[in-house]
Amino acid sequence: MIRQEDVYPIGQLGKPHGVKGEISFWFTDDVFDRVDADWLLVEIDGILVPFFMEEYRFRSDELALVKFEDVDTEVRARELTGCKVYFPRAFADAVDDHLAWAQIIGYQIIDAKSGVMVGTVSGVDDSTANTLFHVSTPEEGELLIPADEELITDIDKTTRHITMNLPEGLLDL
Image 1 (spheres, rainbow, N blue to C red):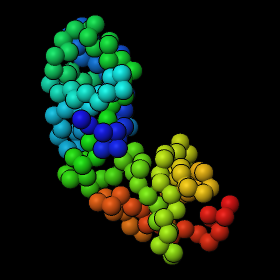
Image 2: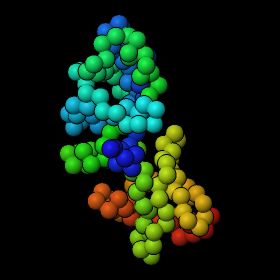
Image 3: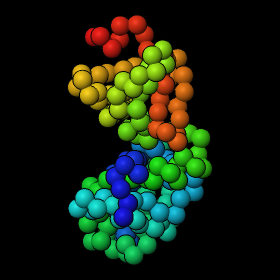
């Protein structure tokens, strides 16, 4: 069984396109194309189900039209509308040096100066020019930490740790 912590979200399925089962796929990470994946994981009623892709074509930087195996009608494609799409972390890590923001959810933030674990990344807000990590901590609840490249000293995909040079007093806010 595929576990939620072993995957990360890369998009959502939209409306059917045509009558032969093709469906729009709004994606935030094109990892499926960079690693030449044969399948994607679609969440149906809380269960991650692999769907093999017959073909896909890009319509924009955020939209692709996908044809899945055994989805041959508009009705069947419509059943998938709104479903979230995921990709396996291990597969992306093994064959791709690129690390998408969605992939780091669940990583632990380590303070480079003290070596102390600050908390776990629970989300990433990249809606503004200053990207922020939402970090869940055992003591403080949730912190917002700037996801600035100058602050990040190391990212270890194996241990799922991000070591950061946090500015003095940031954790006291």
